[in-house]
Length: 570
Image (cartoon, rainbow, N blue to C red; front, side):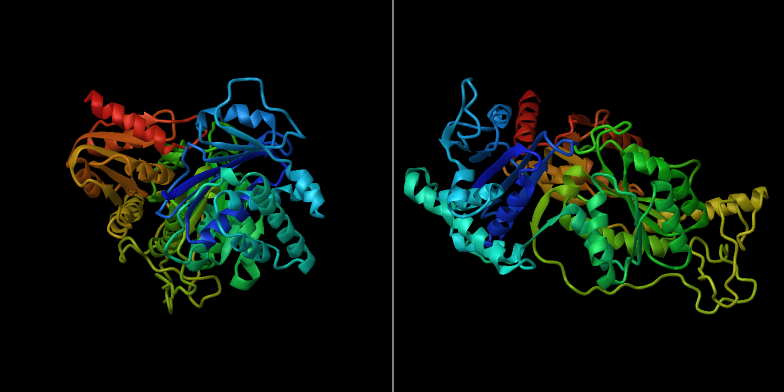
């Protein structure tokens, strides 16, 4: 009997119906079974109402993103059925509650099965909201998967609650299984079980970023909450006491960056987080980090703009902004992790590199990366970090900005004997005292800017996938990595360069890749092709552009269709 090796599940309804929480429990249960899982959610910027969705793509092989075609759809209101018709085919199973709404009077695709989750929950002794857990029992049973895994996941989810909470949720899951066994045996789908019990965790990009910061020795974090960066604050606040981190929820983004800089001045490893319009407010503070040579890491969770834009949707429209953030020239590093694994490793690297090179580092995330759920191998639990460029015993008349040490002069911390110096936003001499001397100004600018020549040799290596040479190569940055890797499963002989370090620009690596292909396409989630423009500026090579800027991520199917048409046309 042929068994499906992968399956795609989507839950959709109104905000407040527990869609994300129940979907996450299901994702964790599937991960516990050994599946590779990717979870993706959509929601409008409303407190109540509006359509919320959560979808899970699971496979016995590695998965990298969501896909479009749905195998099982749980519809909690009528409108969602209409909205997602393009994601269904004749084999899609749609479960809906006919007691709450009727099917729309349009031509429908798929197999529609009425199930009253609320009634099943009430009969099993639960409350109406527990219909969500009933639906999870239904899902596992439809896919012929063991219910015990779901029960184990529920027990862990409610481990800090009274035992009766776990017990009643177990009953709800069992009620869902019983209903399918008694009424819909013929609907069951045979799926392949993973032949490995490889241990995996489920983690969002923001959680991975927070853990990477902890692994990198984070000591101070300040932020004003702003979607999609807010959950970094939630995670770090929860772990602050145990990890010895000072976490501060401040009144605005200006305070957030200035507090982070104040912490950096004292020798503390510091980080702030925001989104695009919040980063606008941080710009002046980041220029202060540039001239005062203060190490700080700033996470920017991109979302569509300008202005408040679309707060809960995704995009990559801030690249050129962060490359040119602030007035005049100063060194910076711009990173763009492509998934949760990179969010962890690059954030850890950033905390170390910011201190080593005494400059600001901006990490470009986005809503898609920040809030999607990835299944990964667990990170190590212990990390060691070196400390960089602190003066052990400063001499009298300490030169904080010494020119004799070339780019990287030694730092002191407040209260250190002989370590006093002036730190402000003015151009300065070696002691930090304000100066307008033209020769000294030139030397200090060269000192600061030469740091980028040091950083370029220390950047994590850019990642390549697929073909090493050929007719067509793809280039992208950040979170587009996942959908492209998923698309490459159906695009043989295509090469792909994933740029996770954008500045200092890794020119040699990029040109080496570009020279191996006859044609190049740049995929990015903005309206003007900001990465393609950067590549042309740095390499003098013009690329084709495949752009998407409707607030939704790329789907692998879209990429396959686009690339296939391009190959045929050329």
